[in-house]
Amino acid sequence: MEQHPRSKPVRMLMHLGTVLFFALLISACLWAWKQGLFRSLDTLQAFIDSYEVGAPLIFVLLQVLQILMAFIPGGMLLTGGVVIFGPWEGLLYNCVGTALGSCLNFWLARKWGQPLVRHLMDDGTREKYLGWLQEGKKFHRLFAWAILLPFFPDDALCLIAGLSPMGWRRFLLILCLKLPSIAVYSIGYAAAGMIW
Image (cartoon, rainbow, N blue to C red; front, side, top):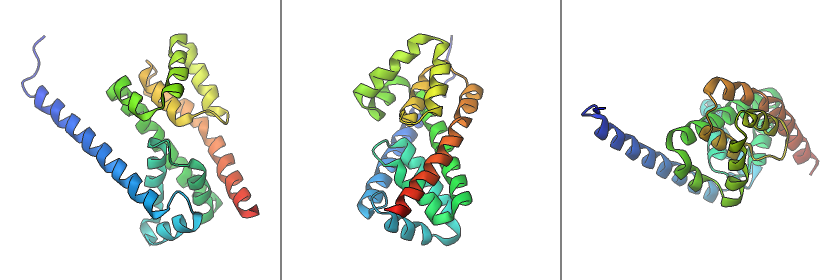
């Protein structure tokens, strides 16, 4: 089959765009880490509040960043959402950021496959959950239960799901199962933070 003459330059441009995206992502992570955004709720709140009207967008972008970069503690942002914006708005922004980040993980794994997943996941976690793909259609049920239950690496599992034949519709339906757990985590982390 003959390829379109522009397909090679387009592919090269897409590769370059991906490299630039990850360079920007890593730079943003390093900058945020140096600022203490992921270590101190007070620092996070001061940073978010400084954006005034744009604060929700900045918060959602940080939440997406947290999903993409596994070393960023999710509990800090889940707590931050509720503390900074209040229970309902904070929950909404936590859900939006988490859903967007999860979808981005799924899409990145779907687009770039195992080579990218190798770079985004540690070997032990990757090997453990790659085995689930051998389960065929049973993978969908395993993925759904893991998303629903606490203590599973949801971000990593979204990458693994991107390597499976699962379609977007099923992925999004399963992702909806995550919303109640985000609510519990958000309120729980915030309540625990207020007690400490």
